[in-house]
Image 1 (cartoon, rainbow, N blue to C red):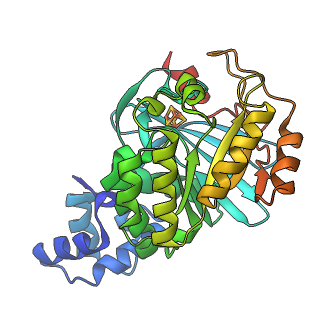
Image 2 (image 1 turned 180 degrees about the horizontal axis):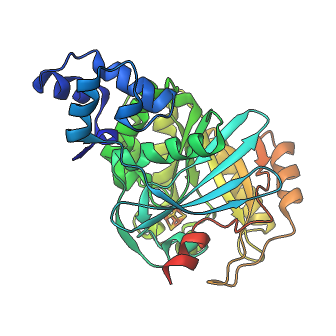
Length: 336
Ligand code: SF4
């Protein structure tokens, strides 16, 4: 049985024609799945009875099982999902003034080893397939009965190391859900060659860089990727991305007590933002038991200094503080 969620729209049309069905059936099926959230062929009532039976013999809508749901008082909902092979992933639904947002995972586990992140503790297992990326949206929209307006690729995994599937996913979001890539943000720890590749894709995608330190020496102590690419190389790639796409870059900056919250860090951050024409998202570090990092109390000072120097800076709104909020922790607690 083939998982229909792994088909691109054009591939589905071709597949149906090869199996002696009309190509326009693809649009009908896609409407049922992505618009009406109907996942069983026997319930797709504008298909003939024989079509429903035939499709049901060769195709399926393979969705992950919801293993656990944690609902916060602020409307944030965290999902632990089991994939067809038993692997677990997380995704999070959040409500903001500007619309409903989902944060999705792009890999099972992560090999990048960032010291502040629970998602990497048990290493990398595999990339998520196109259908598994799609399924996170479908499961959450069905569960919440709410339309997702924005997608952030900031959950478990380094999206640029699942490059082909991610680029296809972003294109298919437009084709199947009508979602512009302007409403999608990809967060990377800074895979420099892939940022250049992404700039050539003709997508108006928002790019967020997990920066977290302003010198190579300090960055290397918390992010192993800094051993492969210097901050200089990363900033050059950001400038190229901005020039090519017109989409402004944002730097994600976790504030960690005593590590990256000194005055020299503020000054370094200001100068990197000026070079890359980037804005900054300041984030209090999640205190997880896998490390000793503590939240900095200087977040307001950082914020004010950045604004005073003409840098567009925001402090990430805390969401889901009363649930297992740190990325990767829910999965970790079930994997042990
Ligand atoms: S922060 Fe992102 S890239 Fe780094 S280990 Fe966690 S999931 Fe991987």
